[in-house]
Length: 211
Image (cartoon, rainbow, N blue to C red):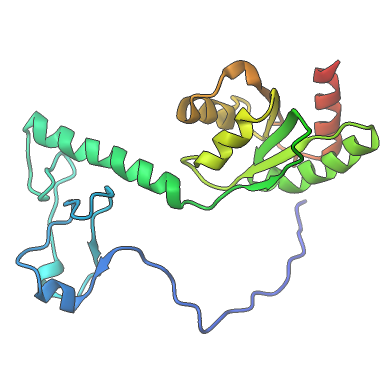
């Protein structure tokens, strides 16, 4: 079961991974001291160092509680300061995570929203629904936290069928919590019997809910 055929991996020797905000040896030489959890740019994302790069890049942190300097603390205000920084980081991430794939016709007021490996089945289902004269828009979420284009897509529609392979409608719950979406607008289409989701299931469930 699930013996999928995929193309051979072609490695791009010119590819250079984007490692984010990292201080190299020269950077470390030019600063007085490195603090792992200090937000110097105001985006909530502190700089990192690579092991062995430079002695000034080393740090030691206890997991039980630390302040923005990386020092151990039991001070409530210092602890909260670190947590508040994570909220800033969260909002920064919202702007830079991969954007969703959106197939949109402005005249449609109903849509499907899904994620991950549901994509192939959803696209096939959209074709089958089109044959039944049911035209739906589509949004494939590719990252979390959701960015503004996902929220805008949902708000442009009267109803959005949220297709996911999860018993508890986790994606729908995240949309409601993170995007402050009206729950009545998000209709769950849930598949969780252990087999891969297929287009026929999606079509049947959506037609059933439309009646």
